[in-house]
Image (cartoon, rainbow over all chains, first blue to last red; front, side):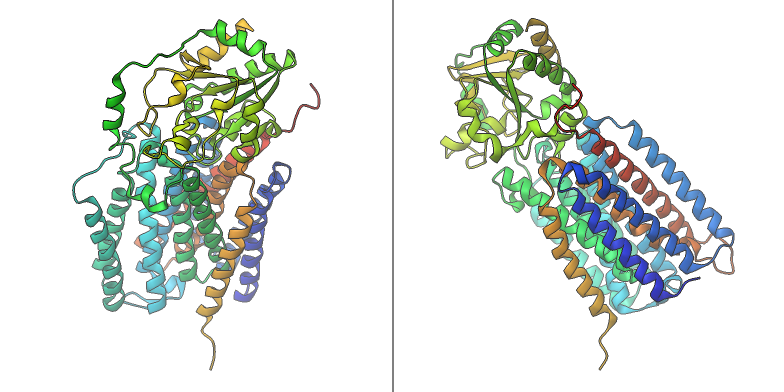
Length: 465
Length: 102
């Protein structure tokens, strides 16, 4: 058994190590060391908890068993998961953090003596407030992440689900959560605690269903933030520094990522959260049914264009992840490089279904990270490049965002793909992208459409090079 | 008059938000996915609460409703801790610089 002061110092150390873990991610070289700091911090926190309780009776073995079972499941998932499924994995993990926060809050509510919070029915007011806030946010994180997971996994349709009076209804529920927390704290009634949890689960579910598939980068970041605030709420209840520091770090991390993603789409956070984007735009796509001429080509044409180019910029998008085309793409690039062609990759902030999604896939395919550029770094290079190879991206290349004030994506930063001498656009059909709008790029003089599965087309091009 | 310890915790919380703000802005965009998986792993330090709940055995024995919730939370958090750190490790191992051997 170690003293409360000593364990508090150790919790502070693990909090600092978590800060260093995030700090390490400022560059790929230092990132691995950062992850090691994070693991060390976690080991310290867990060990200190055992030592400070100092109860190594039979309960201890059950703790170890449950820890081990969870650890094995987690390790198994971590080794098996394909990199393309990373958004689903992260959404799933968020839901677990949320549920764990709820369970800890429930345990603390039922047995407050164990946490030095008072006795059932007479829990310290401050602790009860912190606990109920932590539990409510945890529950929202859980059910929200489950919906995000189902949408990403394709089990649930990615299109927004909206109904009449949705926003007033959600607002009503949010207000009722605040009222419930107030009543719970004044009456200490356990029934109200369960109702609070149920209502929070419900609102988490309702908040995410109207948000469409391509807005998932924002949703995942937002839920990341929520899971942090839930942890911080529980941290206050447990008076645990490590948990408070971590909660604050994760909370602000998720908030910053949401901000970056919203900015990448030039939409306000509330616009994304209120949802329905993409569902209401159907009318605009119907007016463009008149057939505009499109130049389409095959792998041979594409190979010819690229062989005669001196620089090629590759623009990957979610379609590359769906088709699992990253390895085929790398092979194509290897062949191009053998022909002394300069190749770089341009990544839009919201390409894919989560922040940094494309970077991970390219890294998996052994693309060196110093060939991969962000929007700001590479956008001026399109004017000097010979060929832009757009694979699985669409809205992020649409010049309408710069030229057409009527367009729903007007103002969104886009890659200046049309400035290239020629554009190769790998796509399965002419169907509009997620935003439900036509891409002018398809009809440009210098655009060659390659209608095929991204992976197959890339392989065919490689053969023809 | 003595200052409520809550105020100290609140100070830590607020300052940590600022640390988080500056640290996360310095994260390179290409590592945003590992950032999410590692924040997942570290927010599972909530397991310390679960362990306290799980070990809070009273006279009735190891299992009571409260400790069962604790045990379940331990497993959930452990999935996240192991899964989160390992998958981050796996991702970070893939980020390589331009060819040295080729």
